[in-house]
Every structure is written in C-alpha cells, then in structure tokens.
Image 1 (spheres, one colour):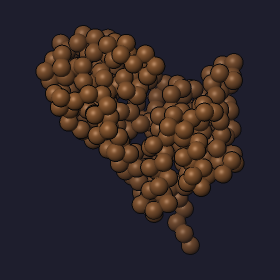
Image 2: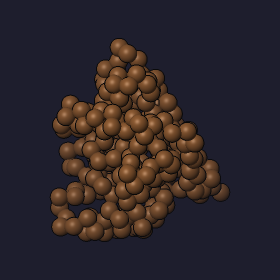
Image 3: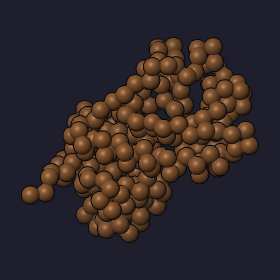
Image 4: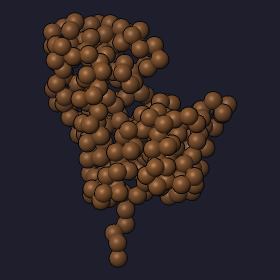
Length: 250
C-alpha cells in the first residue's frame, strides 16, 4: 500500500516559477506530497499555464479574485470551500499577493509563505513590528531592492535570504520554518540578485514541504541573533521606502 501523502494547496498570483519547481519535484519523485489544487488570485497569472503544462486539469485550478468579494471574510469563505472539498491539509503561498483572510488562517493553521528576504519575527516589538525585510509593501523585487539599499546605506548585511515562514494575521510575522542565505556583492543590481536568489528560493520551498511531509506537521525554527539592531531601524525604514518608490508596481 502506498503511504498517505499530505494534500497541499498551492496559492499564487504571478508567474509561478516556484509552483512549477514544486510540481516538477513531485513528478520527479523528489518530493512526496499531493498537490490537489492551485488557487490563483488573477485570471491572467502565468502560473495557470505552468500548472496546465504539468498535468493540472481545470478541476484543479481555482481562480479566486479578491475584487470579486465584498469583504475579506467572503473571500476567505470561497478559499475555505475550495480547500475543504479537496481535504487540504497544508497550504503553501508562493507569490500569493492578497492578504490571507483571518478565517482561512483559523481554518487551516498549517500555512507557509515564501518570502524573498530575511525575516526576524523573534525580535519584533510593538515599536518595531517588522525589524527585517517584511511587512506592508514588502514583496517581489521591492524586498531585494530594500536589502540592497540597506547594505549600501549601512555597509553591513551584505546578504539576503530565501525564506519560508508560517502565515499569521499580521504580514510576515509568523515563525520561521526554513531560510537560506545568499550573498550580495557591491556590483550587484536587483536583477542580478534575483537571478541568483530564485533557484535558492525554489530549493528552500521544496525542502520545507519535504520536511512537512516527513514529520506530518510544520516544524518551526528561530533566529537567536538579531541581524538589524535598533539603532539601524531608521535606516531600514528608509531603505524599504526607497525600494517601494523604485518599484511602484512591485
């Protein structure tokens, strides 16, 4: 008898390179999970075609657009229905841009999110809720730009991280699951960092799912050393603001 595999929902909004990497790993038997549904927040997202090319049929793809719902709770109800009817056990967010509704988090406590930058939830405070490269407006190339700006402004932290973390109600504050560091060089641009970071992001997300499949639950880790000191917090905020201005469309 084949061992039971954890049923996973894949959430995405964009091109879907991580979703494609995960599906390729499953097909190559390098990852033992069962991706039962792809939930997409835009009907023009490139991830849809990537999933079709890898064997997903129309019954496995749900387009659930936030703008089609009056409230976040109604959006969450639609997501919950799509996942419950397929007995989903774990949700993975891979370039998923909408804020995940609270009722989804309550219904599915095992949700992991991909983030292209270093997070430090263990050193968050009320005054500094995101002492890292997460939080409001921090997604996509903005995160990479913020890390590059911070390194150049301070002469420190010449690295970036591919991260997986738990999803909580507040953006990017959930406990760390896995992360891997990638160096930043003085001659780097956002594009050169992104090209070097992306395959590491894929590896980290696949490894996180493999850990979940093996343990049959999500194991978290923590960061013991704070990587941005309170004295650097203002520089961090300026770096993030500059990154948002650089990439107004994300």
